[in-house]
Length: 154
Image (tube, rainbow, N blue to C red):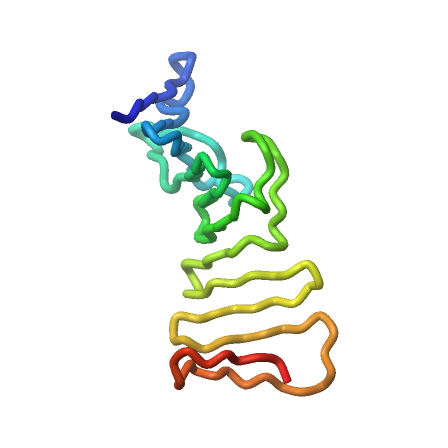
């Protein structure tokens, strides 16, 4: 069985819901924090919904016991982080240079390696590669026309 904890605001004037935590029996944890767009800064701010101004977004973190995580800040990008790239603890630094980022608005999944090369796969199955050090040749998207064929930089 899962344990569900709803974190509530401490004062009457504050936001009613500060977050929701779910802990599954296998050790998987899910943290959901309501957010809404600030009318002043235009950024997402940590606030629960109210009847007058409900929450418009949520940041979500799914943490597996093996260290892998899926992180959504609530703005359209979702990071998939492997165990080896995740830090230890909730406030730790994540090596985002090797994490996958899915951009929901642009329909892409991208990764940037330690050398600064960027690889993007788009929803139409096209691939974009930006090399940190280019040797002047253009890489054409393979379109995956032949299954089980390895495509490499020349």
